[in-house]
View 1 (tube, rainbow, N blue to C red):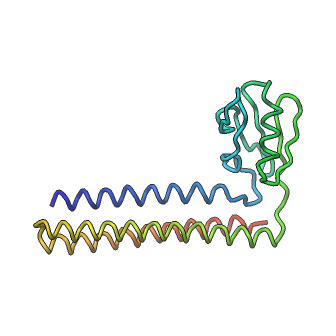
View 2 (view 1 turned 90 degrees about the vertical axis):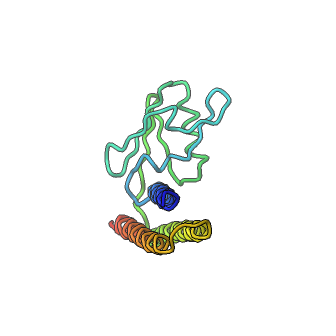
View 3 (view 1 turned 30 degrees about the horizontal axis):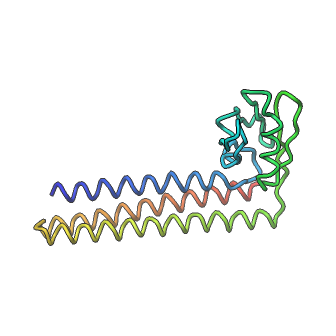
Amino acid sequence: MEQIKEILEELKSGLEKNIRHTQGELGRIRAGKAQPEMLERVMVEYYGAPTPIHQVANISAPETRTLTIQPWDRGIIGDIERAIINSNLGLNPQNDGEMIRINIPPLTEQRRVELVKMAKQETENSKIGIRSLRKDANERLKNAQKEGAAEDSVKEAETQVQKLVDSYIERIESLLVEKEKEIKTV
């Protein structure tokens, strides 16, 4: 019985990681609004080492279409600007010597359609991960039964696994609906 609880706890943990990952990936998809997460993967050359931009500057979105980047060390403002330009995010940073401002251009309808496809692909990848976690948990439950766990307990646990998986897939679906609405809002 203890082994079954452990399997269910590990499944829950894996499902939560999957949700957090998906939320992060969906947050990186630009929806026409300025979001600091858009720059999360930008690496700045800082003392000879590539460093995530959020470790060398404060990034904020004071308005819906503007990002500001305030470096902690003014000497690297040019490096931050170059890193943003080289990141292929399609952003045009404006450096005033103290901070960098980025105006986020409005999305075209074609780009909105592409972004929705990207969001759908990301959520589909997440669902595949969830189904893989379910498969692993069910295999571990079958092994537990072979090792002497009660058949009733294993069947009940398999039902719990399916309910958990269904609830997390619903959460993924709701994340997609939210992101689509965000992308399509002009």
